[in-house]
Image (cartoon, rainbow, N blue to C red):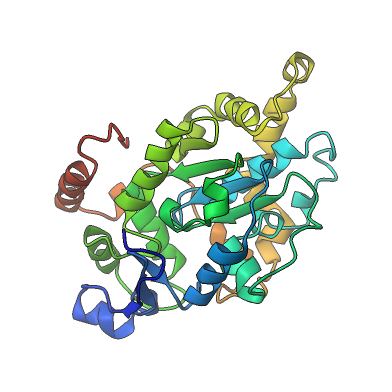
Length: 317
């Protein structure tokens, strides 16, 4: 990867002419420090400020992900686990605030509003999030004992979810979105570099980086929630497990329940191009890509992924 002092290169990704003409998502990509960044939503100045000024604490918790990999669900789980002794599920802030409000993005929210925000008054443990690749994180994070929970997902479902997510901005096709991913030119990407960065660190520093697949969380949310709690340093007691606390948390944070909360149905988003919180809740299904991508497209991207992940032992269902 390029150094943090690398110059900017703004470019239209190599997509079809129709996409290049109309797709604001593609047109907003800037190559920065070796990755494609959606600079219309994440100014490079906010990334530089974050890298320069953020001072990680050893008990900080950071939710990391590529866009559309299950970030909202994971944030709800992390917030509830960390605060399950402070709030009941009937009075948790999640009933009146979207998970992204409670665990704010460092580069999108905090350092975009202020190049050097005062984060010292945030109660411990501080909860933050990021879509940035691991090499772009502030050095203070890498040199601290803070905990990073990284979630990723079958890339085909990410492609379809991302396409749906930004359709409110422009009329672009799922084929255009797919072509961008094949070329590694998506926000905070490429997909394989993003995943490999956190995967390798989870192997090198397993007590600091927790690597989670969305499909694993869907398949056994209770077991994965217990693993998350152990990693975060907020394990459930035997009594809590016996009385169903874990299951209650899972049921509260499940996709359909979050989707049906009034704040996520009617809430409006401030200081962002996204019009409402309901955009974060479309389907949540595993394997929905089969309804949008052809078998030939799947085979093509599988071949690319196999080559890019070769030797890493990282696999996707």
